[in-house]
Structure formats: structure tokens, C-alpha cells
Image (cartoon, rainbow, N blue to C red):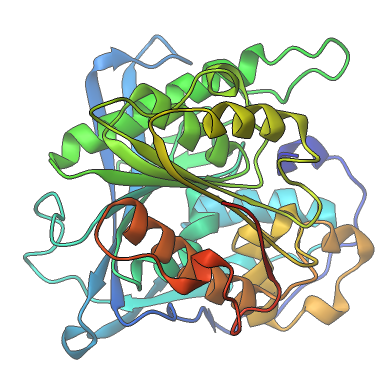
Length: 382
């Protein structure tokens, strides 16, 4: 169930033009403002697994909580121009209007001179991984939402896996090197290799940050599967969340956690995709339910949610005011549940889970199924 939009480039579509008015995305619903900073990280110790001609390079966006009294708001482009161009090319195949993606802006706090200079240990760290063949920038609002609740969130682009990665020096790496599981023979070789690469990238980000405190990791679709793999490989990740991604590889049969480093995990599926209905989730959840060092786990869903509930496109269409005008083809990439409501829910539940799993706060009542403010949320297990 990957959002692998490159596979549909050749779909016929009716191209529509839009005006050039700027569209500003809402800030997070938490008590903090959020600053934004993006940068390149180079792992000189590792040859790129997809291209042996150079060492591994990744792009990262870092979103830090800022006291609202110290937050001076500014607007920044949601997409870099080349990323917007690629998304335009891809999404016209789904009958989306052309020229839309370059109009969006994030509203963030201006970074101070002292921000981003250290590990960010003033706030817990949470890494985020995007879906297969999908830019990290399509999750900036989700990351901003979680950061507004008191977490330093870093979103990661994985070159040759991500559809397009633009580096500060102007280099551009396009994706398409990772293929979805082969339905004919059931082969998952490509995605399992990519999971290990993503896990190595995530560990490298932690190494670079130099934090000594336990961290969290979460992701949507393939990024959620990568979160579990990262936790299996690196016990510095204390807590993880998978938003609606099939599971692959060793985590299906290998328990998380260790005697010294227990771990916690949350599954958050679309309506109808859960540990009772999806075989990979059944295998993963059965393994983790028997794991002696998985000390906290939860499973949730949102009524009427879909795989496309958990990325920013579902919010962008609301900000642009085009939800009601979308064709059936375009609606495939969004959810019946409107974007602002989904992110309000996730802001509360994701932060509550991470606070509890990292041992920093007591369990929020919403994690026990007391969802008076969120009646559409279903606690399925835990």
C-alpha cells in the first residue's frame, strides 16, 4: 500500500491551471511555535548503497519547538522549485491542477543564532521517514504538528529511494531505485534492502546529533516499516510508530527491545487495516506481544481514514480549497477525513505516546481509549 506516485506518470489527465496566490499552511495545534532548518549530512564512512561512485549523502529538515513568546513568524516555501516541478509532473497524472505546489508556504518561527547548533537535548528527538518514493517535504506539516507539542523532529530524505532530493550545492538525485514487492513471485528483496539503508541513515542522524538520550522514530507507509527496522537495529530508538505501512523483514519474527533497552511501539492503521486484517501486521504484533522487552504498545485507527490520511496532501487540498472539486482519480490520494482534523488527532496521540514511552510523562488518558474529544479514534489493542 505504498504511495508510489511515480508508477502513474503515464496516466491520462486533464491539466488545469491555478492562480499564483500564496497558500499558507496552518501552524501546529500544540503549545509551541516551531522553527525550520534544512541541511545536508554526509556519511564519509559509507559508500552509497545505490551508487558506488560517491559516499552516502542525505537531506534533513529539522523542526524545533520555540516558546511562542520568542517566536517571530516568517513564511518559507513548502517545496524547493525542483521538488515542486517534479510533484507537479507526477500529480497531474492524478488529475491535480498544475502550478499548485509552488504556491504553498509554511509559517514558522525565525531560527535564532543559537538554534540548531547542538543535539537539541532540550527537547526529545523524533526522526521521521516518508513513504516510498515520496519526498520528506510532503510531511513538513505533520512534522510541524508533532514539534509544536514539544519534540525536535527531523525528517529524512533517502536518496535514490525518495522521488527527488535537492542538495544545497544544486545537485539533484532522482529516485526509482526501490521497487514495491513483486506480486507475481512475492519477492521483497528490493524493499528489504532499502529498509536496511534507511535504518543506517537514521542511525547516522543520531550519531551526528550526538544525543545521549533515548530517541523516537516514526513514519508513514514504508517509513513506518523503516521505523520498526531502525528500532531493531539500534536500541537508542526507545519508541516507534508505523502509520499504515506494511511490515517487512526480520521484525516480523524478531522481537524488539533488550534487557538493557526496552522499547515501545504503536501501530496506527487506516480504517480496516489492522493487526487482525493485514498479515504482516498480524505477524509483527504477535511477535511483539510475546516479546519480553517490549514494555508498552498500542494500536489505533481513525474511522473512515485511508492510507492517504497520513501525509500532507490531505491537508494541502483543504488549505487550497479544492477538496470538493477533485475528480475520483485525485481523491485516491487523499482521505475522507479532512487534513486539519487528522493532524489535530495525531498531534495529541503521537506526542502522548512518545512522552509516555520515553518515560517523560504519565500516560495520557487518550491512550487508554478515553477519547471524548476524539470520538472517531478507535483503540484496537494495548
